[in-house]
Length: 162
Image 1 (cartoon, rainbow, N blue to C red):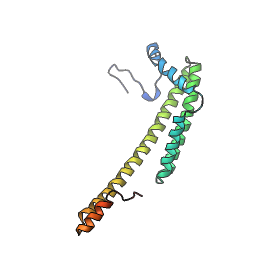
Image 2: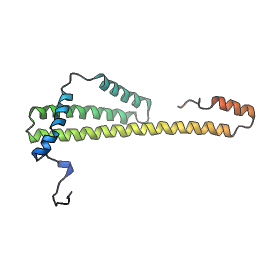
Image 3: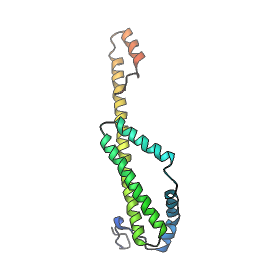
Image 4: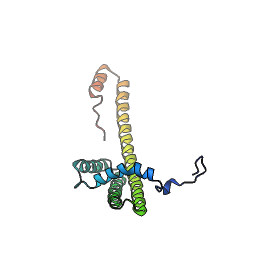
């Protein structure tokens, strides 16, 4: 990519080359380091993994993909943790900085894929709900007697979603 000054840069191969950018990113690196150095997985993290797996098993159409995505997030998260720890121990190393940037990109990609899958599940569930409501409305519309209409009104919205 070329900017308006004629400089070429590749966003896939970014390296921090100025001290001002490095100083700007320093607080972020410290925060990541602090997060990485916490002891053991938090309850929120465990709950998040449990929820992801629950969603996967409740939606058999995407169980395999969802579990693979959860596993990929775990792996890339671990790699990011290791890379951040190594970089925090030697922040002047370009190699370790590059490793951390690559690990962060991989983690971001894995999380994005997981979120897309979760959104697909939500859309699928919304479409199923819409179909159920449409069927219930159709029953109300096509009622041939006052009694049938009253029965359909009583059962409106109570149809189970499979």
